[in-house]
Length: 352
Image (cartoon, rainbow, N blue to C red; front, side, top):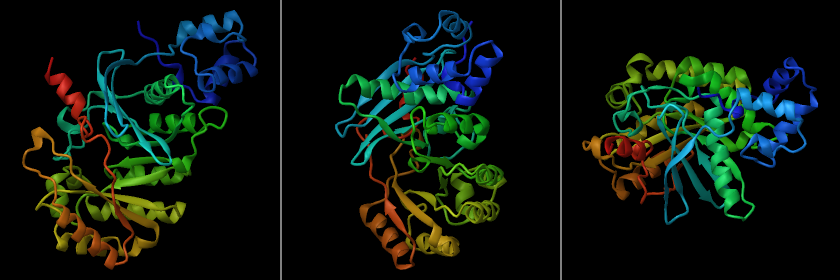
């Protein structure tokens, strides 16, 4: 019978659990240090922890619940991992190298039910949520990979933009964030973490109330309801007006800048008129917003969509800038290794 990942416990949860099982509070700090500072891969390596405590941990938890199934390395330094979970499901995690350090894109669900018509992640419907431990362990496995390079590099940034809708797995997401931000462990700063949502309005409000200081990105992709409903079925249930109300609440509550993600699809949402409409939609939020324009990575199964031309991307960008909207075009990573999120997993499952 499989055991849960030890990485699923926040420091407070680990402390409470050990105390409940008859151990002193300081044991939690010892175990935490071995997990996140020394980064051991087996409980037996925790040499200053009492044997009975180690036995207790081994009886209830595993350190390694993810198995590396496929690893693809790009010419630009991007590494894409396909991990097999204990139940046999596959998930993707991506390591990206930037001038400012190493960033990891993590997955929060097995499959996705949001139904964005351009996205490879939604090709396979949601099977289940990942536990907080399975999300943390993605970071740890990538950090172990970096440790193995012998260059004393560390994961410095996290984007929660992999397969699945993070806010549809809200409680496990929050526990994951608590673990990776903990100053006694990985100590990844909240402002170096970005969570992306397709627009679950109630969870946007809830996220504002958490006061996590983590960056928020909204997958908008269209400036009006008709077009957004065509490419994102979620919009039929949560139209743009409802989403914008939630964003207003978030901005008022946190006073933190929000990012609008906008994937450019040739002759679908990339015309100058769309840029003008987008600028008008977010005009009152321009001081606390940024538009991230994303060139489309074509997916075989979504043949109706093509990548916008460089000219269309430039015109869209210039139009937003002239309207006073802060924006940029996302730098691409790993275009030679199944770059689209969910693409590697989909290909592997089809190949079975």
